Image (tube, rainbow, N blue to C red):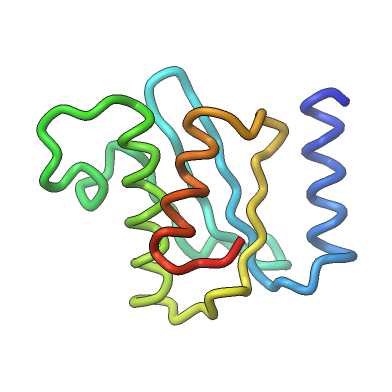
Length: 117
C-alpha cells in the first residue's frame, strides 16, 4: 500500500471508527521530527519538534533516534500536564511512514511517559 493511501485510510479510521478523540500525527524530515496533536475537528492542540527547547534540554549531543525518543517523552509529559488528556485517548498516526527507526522511537517515548497508543 502506498504511503499516500495509508495516510487517507488512517484519517478515515480516526474520524469514523476510532473511539479515541485525539490523534498524534508524526512528520519526518531528514534532520527533524514533528509531532502534532489534533482533535476530530482538525484543531491543532499541541505541536512539538526535535528542535524545540523542551526536547533538547539537558542533551549535548544526541543522534536523531535519541532526539525522536525525547520528543515523544516530552510531548507525553506536556499532554498530561498542560492539556490534561486521558492516557488512552490518543491514536498514533504515522502518516504513511514505516513504523521503524525514528517513528517508532517517538511512539516509545509516548508510551514511556504513560500514554497508551
